[in-house]
Length: 466
Image (cartoon, rainbow, N blue to C red; front, side):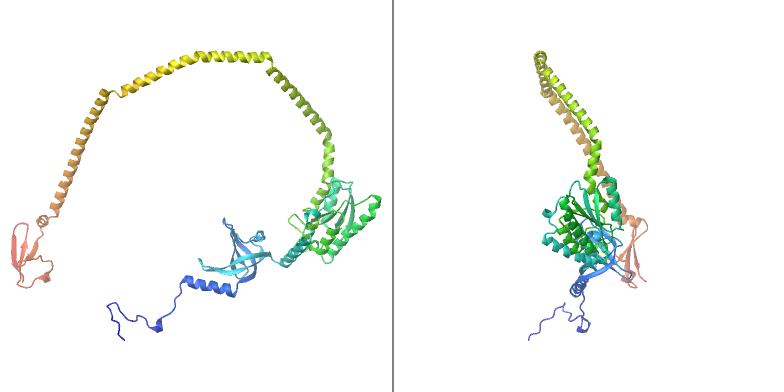
């Protein structure tokens, strides 16, 4: 084998095999960590307290999930289809599910959030959603099956706890707005074990009671199922399937008023009408009667007001007819024609005079234009401008010549000051080799006995080195 020729740049092996090593860039190392986290950990559920919540203008939500010993950066992207965004509040303990990854530009690991739940109610919420989907698929929530609520109920059934705040609120509103309303009260428990069965039994009992009243013409107009506010665990009896079935099977329209305005239960979806609170439900039931009472009270005043408005309208109509009659009267028409005749006479007298004035103005304008372009005047103006330009040019040339002369004189003086004669005049001298004429700048350039030449401002000296 022919050995390749070496060049001047061939230095051989700079590093031996023992000292070579693999060096990663920051991006490569971060990428390996990201792939490791995503493959080994991936999707996780994490519980913690929300802090440093920030909602950017882009729609992305950034927050920190922390506990007593550590914290985790989290991000909820705008495009994530998630309805529980409002659960994120500083200081609130939540359970989140997401994918663990690394944000490479900053080299920090973070959780990309997919699901959010409040701590402690995750299982109940899942159960609620499952039952909601099941009943919706069976048509229990369909709008077409919901019945209208009677506008003027005379007798209602009430299902609630006898010791709760809901019954007090309902009775207070009914006594105030419609004392004549009859209430058939069926007490039951509204929370705890067995409460759902008691609520369903109360609804069925009212339906059986109503069937016994039908022959005598005394029926229940609607049923109100209600209780006050509380946690999701307190309201859970109204999320049970047995209550939803009882409401759906009821032959009497049902109003559900459970909890506060922000609380929604399965019974709210099945009922014919949902009220946000027990007080609001009582107000809805007595609204028509209360409004009618106010209408009857205000009726005399309203009737008098409407009569006065009708009389005023008729009087205005008569006035309009009278004004229309005046406008079409022959005398009015004759006056208008006479006024038009006067206007035409004025226009006829004004038009010739205006035409004469316009012609005179045009003549004056033409005379001014003719004088402006008179040849003698134009030549005189051009001659004066020529003289001015020549004077300006001469003056400009003198100024430039003077400036160039001054500059040349200055450069001559600077050159003269920098010349060798001026240096010699200040006491300096130039020493050269007498034989070769080379200028000597260092004592090592000569030896002992060497002949040198020294030039002064006036004259030359020859000397020998000792």
